[in-house]
Image (tube, rainbow over all chains, first blue to last red; front, side, top):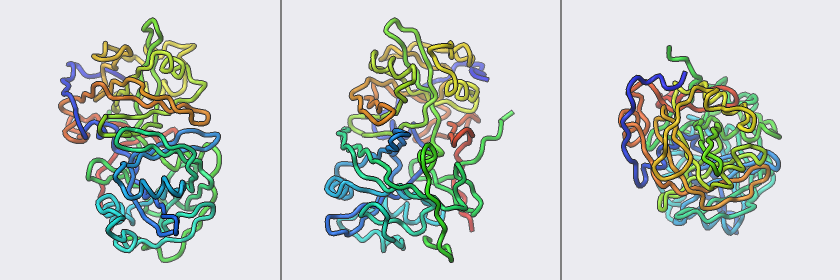
Length: 190
Length: 190
């Protein structure tokens, strides 16, 4: 199946911020965190990955200048909220505005509720969430990679059955630059 | 746009290997590495993320028991090859077989070629690739998270223009459990 191209492809060198775009599209999630008094903040994050099955570890890369960066560093807890198309306005807003200036949760019409194992809140409309305790902070250039142990993972019964399904018409969104899309099962292109 | 669900969703707790599936679908890439003599190996990887713009850093999480784990640890270089539908057989094979027993490159019909900045090879059919030098190995449970500095990034001229486009009918594949899919631009569901 491979190497079906009859003539060699021509390549161009990619530099700067475009390098990261080679690893997109990626699921866009809303990370919730809070300050030491419990005041919440929300940030759109696409730079995340599972890391380990046992113990269950995941990682998120957060820019050093982001307001959420200091909150997560101080409180050492965060929640990854997997949201769907119904939360697209929040995904857009929480990537563009800074929590230091705006109340992004009201800005985006988000409803929050208490988490089970950690201090940062859950997003009520989330299809699923991962409540995380920071185990390690890794310096990564202009970002910090926060490694979190998953203390509790939950998913909407109708939306997740071993993998995401689209029974309720709401599926996780993938981000590619400033465009949002959805995953479609592979259809063989022959 | 948020919280359009009229009744609260019912959640179930997700445990074990299914926790990672909450962060899928993810682009499935082929990571090439080699031993100290230059003998290549290929591994399908979906647990990866950009980490930093400047310097350009990315990370991949590799299971401790994978043959490629030791190769990357020894040689401290790897290449992330972004491949498309034409390489789906390789993506399937290189996630299931171990390089310690099989020659996965011939198994998958992959053609390799020399990289520019690192020892591990490129996959000729790749839509793009990131040649990486390991900067840091981070212990992450049953995996190691390898942080790589991107020494060279290239993309096929016809396939990438600020983001992935589908001009040539070959686009990066996303993996959700054992199913492959493609990204579709968002169509508002109302």
